[in-house]
Length: 129
Image 1 (cartoon, rainbow, N blue to C red):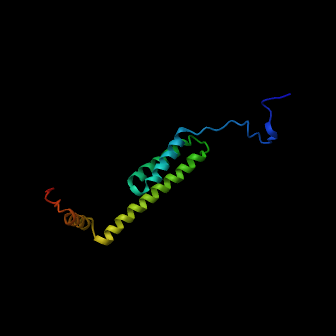
Image 2 (cartoon, rainbow, N blue to C red):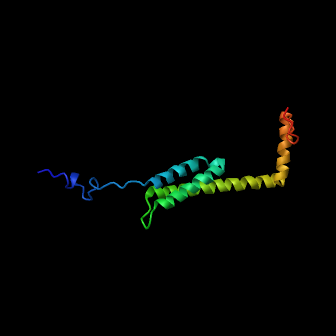
Image 3 (cartoon, rainbow, N blue to C red):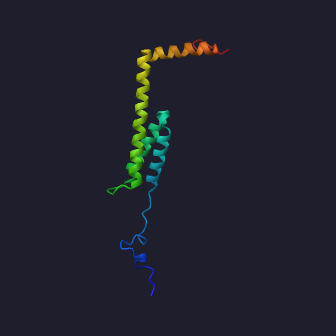
């Protein structure tokens, strides 16, 4: 006779009848923030914000003493990578500015000079036309 609760398809581990583990909302939010963080790595600060949120949500999704879900572990790793890549890009940008111009003031003066040469607008006086 057919019993719907017995082991189907000769599955010794009973994989088909096991209840599925649901992903928590925090883990899903962590993964969404991690993906946005990776996508925005070249914008600098947005990647740091979203990567940090991904790390925070991944840590909070674990709960008290539970084994972390796979998605929250991946979100933690991807968020950390987004933060590190953005930090390296920002540090490298400032290092190149200081190496090429000596200071931020020299960089700003060069920017104003080039802007005036290309567009004929003097930004120091506020004269736009």
